[in-house]
Image (tube, rainbow, N blue to C red; front, top):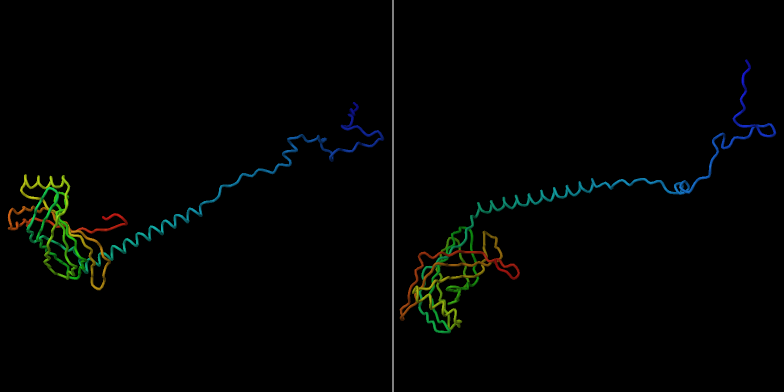
Length: 259
């Protein structure tokens, strides 16, 4: 049985030679469309990696750690220094008390007040190694927030383990009062026969500890619980001061405010 002969895949050329293959024997190429032309000129998209912040975060954490360590170290050193200072000097506040108070004059009219008080104050310094230097001391008397007298004491150097007696006269010479103030004072005298009295001593003090001196700071001594009786004749009356309590407070001034 004879074999069949199939024609070639590509016909021969007219001159008897085989037709040349297009593109080296590959399939014939077609013209590129618009989408292919656009994508050919467009750059390849590569997504950007997020910036690395690990180094910056580590720097911030390190800075916060050292700052915290520095603050803790300063606090510990200050506490140690304070403890050593307390053990060596054992500083205490000075104390004040009203030894006696006499009312020599208290004349109240419809518009004015004339008063005179004899005041004796005892100042105590309980410290062995601390000295106080006081500026002139301003004294004010008030009753129900009404000023009824004022005075002063000279500057004072208060040595160690010292008790000093201070005497002065507090007075009011024709102080003008409004109707409400006069009414309040007269009501107190009529109903209770006595007037509540508050004494304030304001000054600045400088402290010397060993060879070290501090700057001046303001202090206020406030004495409450005093009752005075107005004299009816020429003889002065004496107030009871055995239960009088005097508190010493620092007066720190920051710009316009005093605390």
